[in-house]
Length: 332
Length: 242
Image 1 (cartoon, each protein chain N blue to C red):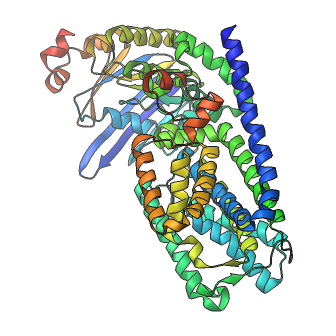
Image 2 (image 1 turned 90 degrees about the horizontal axis):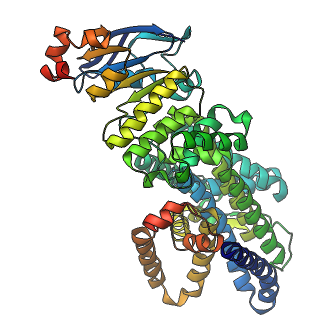
Image 3 (image 1 turned 120 degrees about the vertical axis):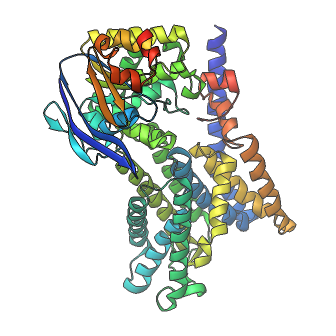
C-alpha cells in the first residue's frame, strides 16, 4: 500500500516536472521576445549546444568513443549547406539535409578509419582531423571565405523575430533527443554500451564491432551536421572559429557536467552552461575559471555529472545494487 | 558435433605460442586442457574463439572452416567462450549482460522473449534476485556464473571455459561444477582450461596437455596423469597426487 502511494506520488512529481518544463519552454520565448530578444538568442544558441552535447554523450558516454571531432562534423553540416547555397543556389531547406548527409558520410569515413583505435589514439586522431578541416577551410579562402566567414541565407527570410528560429531549434533538439533516447534503449544501444565496456568481450558475445562502432560515428555525425546546418543558417555566417579546439572542449564540458552517460542530462548541461556563460559575462575570463573548477569537481566526485543524479531521483532510475551498495549515479 | 584442429600455429614475435597443435573430437564430451603457465592454453582458446588469427593450420567446426572468422562470427557458428579474467559488461545490469548475446545472435525473437529466457537462465544459476544489479557489484565468482549464463542464452554447442574455478569461493566452485555437468547432460561440449586439478580430473572425459605450444599428451585423464612427459613438464608429483 505504502509503496503504491509512493509510486503514485513519484509519478505525479515526474509528470509535474515534465509539464512545467514544457509550459516554460513554450511561454518563455514569447516573454523574452518582448523584454529581451538577446536572451532569446542565448536560448537558441543554448539549444544548439544542447544537441551537440547530447549527441557527443551518445558517442562518448554510451558508445565509449572519446572523439574530439564532433565540432568538425557540425562545421561540415554548416559549410556544406552554405557552399551549396552560395554556388548552386540551394535553399536552406535542401542545403541543411544535404549538409547533414555530408557530415554523416564524413563520420562514416572517420569511423571506419578509427575502428582499431583505443581511447587516447582516437582522441588524437580526431583532434588531427578537426584541425586539418579547420586549416583547410581557413586556407581555401576563395571557396570558403576563410576567416572572413561564409555568409548563409537566413532560414526564415528577412524576418526580425527570433521566435521561428527558437521553435525550430527546439523542435530539432527535442526530435534529436527522442531519436537518441529510442536508440539508446534499443538493442543497438545495448550493443553500444557493451562495446563501451569491453570490445573484445562484446565481439565474443556476437556483437559486430565494426558495424556498431561505425554506426555510432555516423549517427552522431549526422546529428552534429544537422545542428550545424540549422545554426549556420540562424546566425547567417559560419567561420572556422566555430570549431576551434576550445569550442570542442566546451561541448565536452557541457556533457560531462550534465552527465555523460545520460542524453537528457548532457543536453540540460549544455543549456545551463551556455546560459550561465552569458549571465556571467561581467566576470570576463573568470567565468571560464569557474567552469573549469566545476568540471574538475564533477570529474573527481560525480562521475556521471551534476544533472544526471537529479534525474535519477526524479525518475527513480538506476540499478538497485548501485544505490544500495555504492550510492553511485551511473546508468541514468 | 564435430570439431577438428589441425597443425595449428601461432607466434608472437620470437615466441611460438602454438606449435602444430592438432586435436579432434566428435559428439558430446568434456575436455580438460592443462599445462604450465605460458604453455599456450589461453592462446589456443583465443585462436579458436577468433581473437587471434592463426599463422598456420586449420580449425573446423561441423565441417566448416572457422579459423579466419572474427569472434562474433565464431560464436554464430556455435562456439562460445569465457575469459580467464572475467569480462562481464561491468556498468550494465546482470539482465542486460544476458540480453547482449541473445539479441546479437537472434534478434528476430524479440526482446520480450529473451527477457523471459534470461529469467530462466538466472533462475538456473540462482541469480535471479541480482538481475537488476550492475555486473560490477557482483563477486568474482558470480561474474564467472554470469559469463556462463551469457553462453546459455545462445545456442552454443561447444563452450570454451578459461579458468572457470580460479579465485572462486569453494561453494560457488561446487555450483559451477554442477552447472557444467548439467549442461553437459543437456548435450553441450566443453573445453576447460583449469589449474584446479581436482575439478579438471573429475570433470574431464579426456585430458590434453600443452607445453611450450606443443601438445604433449592427449587421452584418458587417469592415463595422462601418469604420463612421464606430463609429470616432467607440469608440477611433477603434485599432478600425480591429484
